Length: 328
Image 1 (cartoon, rainbow, N blue to C red):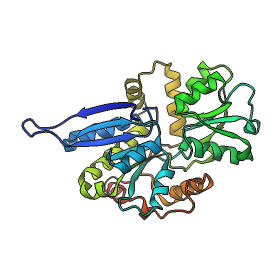
Image 2: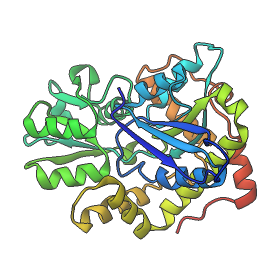
Image 3: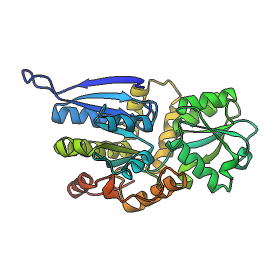
């Protein structure tokens, strides 16, 4: 299940004994949209003295199941539909979203040579990570927006972004979504790949990535969760204002050797979409649009009030102290 483990051990005073451990799960391998959480987790470790143990899971649903089971304390992931669905089950210990760190999707739907439009995908295979995952929700949204009958498209479970790109290259699928960075890189490396649709142009307010915890953990660790939300909103604002720093950290964390033009183009696409949750992300308009898409994808059967799956308490405290972010 877990594909990668990392342990940050910072700021425990000498002689103070073992630092408490904060177990953090990510719903994917590190990519150009979420690696910057390292700024957050390093800051939390420095400020609180916790050890931060990070686990990267294959996808969001697995990460959320691990959160429900108590295997991790906090999850950074896409696939908000899983949280909404759990909220309708009236569980004793609910999952609670404390902020959205990516408030617009950066995914690009790529097609193989011979596929020139979304209409060409009827009868063809579109690769996703898993049913109900963000790759599934956004693929269906882009197809519906173009007037394509989704029932005539073969939605195929392939795996994460790297698996989908490999499947595109081998011909196992005719189309699949990829993060902007991966899509730009793939088009340079795989002959004939082309952009069929840009998700952010179709669903600009979708909550692509969230931070969630269990209600019991939130209640028992309010100060720690406040520190985490404050640090993550600081990091989101840094991501949106420090292009050079963002790309420098990406190169170090992702270990990918590509031309600077790829890094720059991917960052500029994300900036143009105002993707980072600089103000916490859980505003009514975005929550409404996100739930509408999850309903269309049949991940949920009815809208769920925010109070049943999220809290804006820490976001509101942060904004009272630091104000709203001003985009350049």
